[in-house]
Length: 71
Image 1 (cartoon, rainbow, N blue to C red):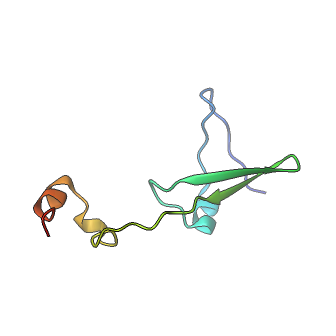
Image 2 (tube, rainbow, N blue to C red):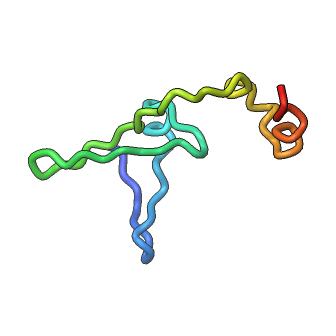
């Protein structure tokens, strides 16, 4: 069983094996479902993005957005 501690601010770190299993990266959203007294943690569904540069994370700065805004 994988565990983590809860801080005084009700925060916890999602353990690395769980992040890997769910394919979680910084900025991803997490969904929770309560079922029969248990909580199921899952990666939240991502809405499709109508942005031609969405897949190019290296072009994700404010300067890039301004430079390519009129394309």
